[in-house]
Structure formats: structure tokens, C-alpha cells
Length: 311
Image 1 (cartoon, rainbow, N blue to C red):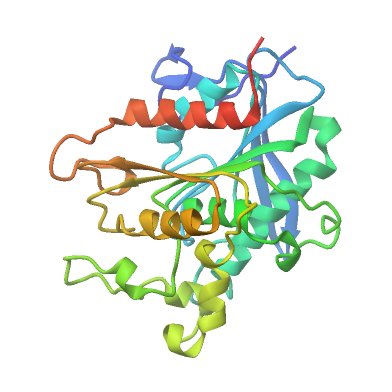
Image 2 (spheres, helix red, strand yellow; image 1 turned 60 degrees about the vertical axis):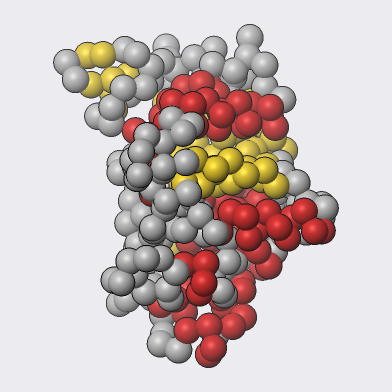
């Protein structure tokens, strides 16, 4: 009998139940994929309504929160769930993961977030038969900090980000990536400059290094966390969706990576959302395309890359 887990995160499948909602398929919740010290890192696996298959494609979601907040099942996930539903109808398994979060005192840095997200992919490959997935058909997707992580998963060399030794042999290369308003390059402070006086252009630097000094002192660490320096001609396709009035991750990040991609012959598409701030908030007018259209475009891109067709 299929398991149903009631989630308290907003409407997904159009099945209302006293303010709660239900995922139409089986959900395997809180699956531990690695242990770091005393910290247990987990993922949720959402099976499509059609049921478990032998080798289903996967949409792998990495949450935002500035590498310092958020979780696999709270925060921005209600905005993402309509995308989950649309791809699930095509037979796609959806996965949402937790990863270690930055704190000035806990020693976690942005690099650890990348490593954890890569280990989540490795866990899926190691356990592909158990969950009925095809590890060679995974699209990665994230928003904000998760957008940067999704770009890194798609573009960076996994051998550079080895985490759990039990998973180290199971490298996975996603076939495509999707980034909602994710930063592309930390080395150029101009990309983070806004009209707001309280925005430090190097506001994420400490999350990269854990030390003062910025790019001038730690150029290689900044480059390592910048998808811009990982993209190559044969990198997997990438979709960047970015609001043109985003003050948190300014719009300049998307065309910056797109320019390099075009120059080297890599496959990067950019969708500009007009009048949209971070999290597709209204900023200067009604966002165009609107949120529902953004969700539809995201799902369609993932389905197209995965070759999913549903029943």
C-alpha cells in the first residue's frame, strides 16, 4: 500500500484537507544519506503518482537560505512544490535535501554545502535500485544559495568535492541544471553591487572562507565556489532564471555566465523575469513571466532534459 505523508507546506496536488495537503504518490521521508560528526543529513524522496519504476528520472532540489538557513521541507519549498507536481505527472522522482549550514562558530563553509549536495547525488547512485531511479538521468535545481549549489553540481568536478568516504566511489554527473536567482561568480564584487547602501558587495565572503580578507587574500577559494570558473564547452545544459530587480543576487549574475558560455560554446539559457526581486517578489510592477509561468517553464525544461513522458 502506498504511503501518504501529510505535509503542512501549502497546496501541491490540489487535495485540500483542513488546511493540509497530501502528496499523491508515495513519499520516503527523512532518508539519511550521510553522517557528519553528530549531524545527520537527510533527504525526502517523492515518488510519482504512477508509482515506483525500475529506473525513473530524478529532479534533485537544493534549497536556498544563504548557505546558512532553510531546509528540505520548510521555507521556500511551497514555491517549488508545483514544479514537483508537474514533473511527477511525467514519471519523475523528486528529491529534496538538507545540507550542513554555515555558522561563524561551527566551522561549516560554503564548500561543505557543495560537498554535502554532491554526496546526496552519490547516495542516490549507490541506492538507485532500492529507490527505482536512473542515476544517469538527474536534473539538479535550486533557488538562491541553492541555485549556486545546483550550478556547482552541474558544472564542477565532483572529484574535487569528496565527502563521505563510503560514497566517494559513486560520482554522479547531472545531465542538466536549473538555477533560480543563484550567484554565478563571487570574484567580481561589481556583480553584487546594488543601489542599497546597506548591502556589502562582499557579504558572502565569510561564508566562503570563514576569515577576513576577502578575494584579495583568498582568490582561489572564491574561484572554487564560482560556477563561472567551472563551466566548459561540454558542461551539461543550464537554465538560469533571474529577476531584473533582484537586490539580493543582482541580475548581472545571469548574463555574466551567459556571456562566457556563449564565448566557449557551452549550453546556457537565460530567462529574465521583469519586475521581479528575490523569490520572485513584486519589485517595480507585476513580475513577467508570473510565478505560475516560471514554475511551468522550470518543469518543462526539466522534463525535456530528462526525456520524461509520463505514462
